[in-house]
Amino acid sequence: MQKFITLLLVGLIASTAAEAKKQTKGGDPIVVSPEDLDSSVMSYVEANVLATMYHELAHALIEGLSLPVFSREEDAADTFVVVITDQFFNAKEAEQLTWASADQYARDAEEAEKKGLEPAVWDTHSLDLQRYYNLICLYYGGDVDTRDDFAEENGLPHDRAETCKEERELAERSWGAVLDDIKRTQAGPDWITLDEDVDTLGNSYVLAAQGVIRKEVARLNERFAPDLEVKVVIENCNQENAFYSPSEGKITMCNELSRSYVHD
Ligand SMILES: [Zn+2]
Image (cartoon, helix red, strand yellow):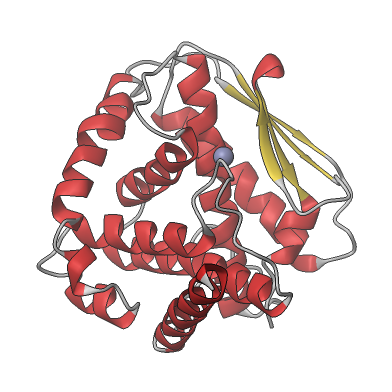
């Protein structure tokens, strides 16, 4: 019975999130916009590739700088995505990025529900819909006066919205302080190196996604200079995934994952 109620509840929340996402339009790509590709599809792919890379980068910073983490590392990495997105992009762009990456979690939740999969409550990551609401809440909390429409359109319940400003302040005190500490102050070697596979799975969006990663690595090298080395590898992995390998200081961005963000 408990399981039934849980599934019913997840279903209800999923449909709320799905309803909400229809109300938000896709924007234009910010980093890479190839002329022959659909701009709203590209914008969605770009947002998710960036959010995923930032998430993995958070793992690299936590490990490489021995940062204290007082709760689940996966949640901390999701929080980092919002903090760095707001530093790197203007409000309109950051909103599109946050919405698209949150929306992908809503899609994943819907997909899992359709397949009849039980929510992985034991997982190291929060549930997909929790990740959805965490992103919406933290972004909204960055400026509650101007982002209230965003919160409402994306179905953030009032009970959660009440604490988002404080949650975001804590995120800034934590991750914002780390980013301040590692700001580049002088020219020097790149801390992130990129290793690209030439294969693109025959998909133009995957090719464009590689361009997004390349430009983002350049920007991260320009803006920050922590005392660590990170290798970003783009390759075919036979799985839709991205991951950080601590022993190698390596972030792997799978081409299959970029392709999974292509929704026509
Ligand atoms: Zn992670």
